[in-house]
Length: 237
Length: 220
Image 1: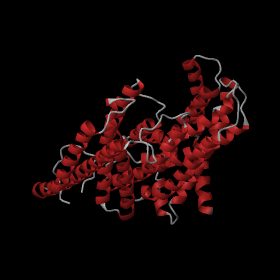
Image 2: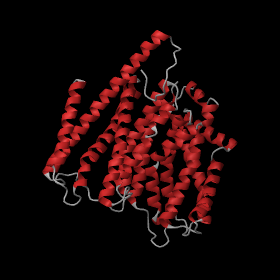
Image 3: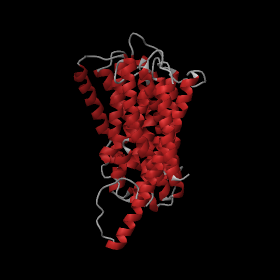
Image 4: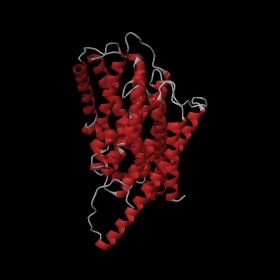
């Protein structure tokens, strides 16, 4: 699918999702209007975690093939998931404040696990920054991404076990937790968030490749000892 | 096997001759108990507080060891010698992880009596040793991997702890929760099996992951 078509599909789906959230999905009987943040928070968290795992898969590919395109993909997955992660923590905090009265609750295992995962991945960029050699940077970042990818599910399990009791889940794992109207809205919102993620991912890859090409051309014009201005931990092709 | 034995002997001999890691870790742990005494302002601890103080102290002491673990190899050409030798690189990882495990056991041989003497209210029970040994495996595996990752970076003293601490949170959860009933005076009971399960699963998963991804760290 071309980038333009993908972007259009994202805008349409997200607009549709917000229309459904505000005009179609019923207000939650217990929490009222604020529960609607669920349609942003949960898809965002799911996509962010998916991105971390996808980053690990690309990192495995990079370690196997040593092609720098896999390192770039892994980097972009983790980078975007980190940005989504900030959104997840902020929306989660707002939701916690509205429904439990505190900005942060330690006995909500999913939120706590997400914070730990986020703190771990927040070290990804500092790790890349502190290694000069490009090939080594890519290899070490991949090793980190694989380890952290395996950590994600294990951490959720450990934090969940550590809770004496858990809050009731809004979205039960088996069918029947949500009324059909909410379910439809949730799935549309999830699809919209997925499309948004894929679109942003493709844009960032395209931008990074273009920047690499421009840099190569500039080097050709100005000689090899041209000083590159600006620091970036991103993989350079 | 003899390669592994030789590498392990080398690690332990270096540590015995230089005494760089273990004495520092042990001293750090004992000092931290004193700091906790003043920080918490109480003569003895028990239960969940005791479990937390013990596990966090051991964790921070082992971070010191993780930071030192690969420094000699990086600065004095141990890595280059490893690459020149016609042996499997993963055996270096296994030898380092076993050495780290031994350091942690020695650390606990010093720190546990000090903890019982300085802070702990109930006596130490044998089951606690099982919990700590299981935690040691996880810390040794992750510490060896992260140490090797961090030692080649510019800010290695910063990157190592930053990466190791969140990765070791499940170990802290498992060890502290499992140790909690063992260190309690009033509600004393055996360790809950599910927390030992978390520790065991963590050890297994990360031993396999670290074993699989260690090789690329040693190239070039």
